[in-house]
Length: 143
Image (tube, rainbow, N blue to C red):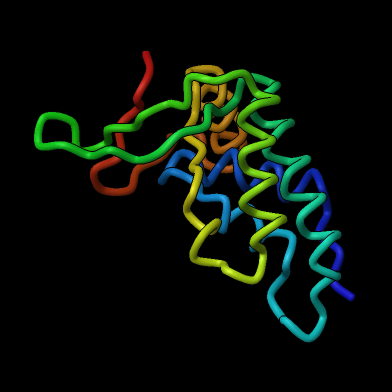
């Protein structure tokens, strides 16, 4: 059975946030693993996914919400304006109670960096690449 390393998953998500928003389905996939025949039981994956999301948000690295791109702001994001416990209860209800309907939960919530999260991601990234992100179109969201 595949068991993801907690710190590796966390660091990977923090780095992934430099490139894109992160969906609930993406976090789930990090604990599911690369091979469905070796995946942990769904209840374990759900527990780890929910715990990771709570940790990333409670540490102030990400906020929860929904992408809302517009012409004026192609990277638009509507942050959920509810307490973390309420947000987690909403995620839990859809994700756990309707697990067999992946379309209902896969992209119901997304994570995007806060200034603190972007700063940490850049610090981690620069440990291997001192020049920082160089892929086309990348620019920091926070100064």
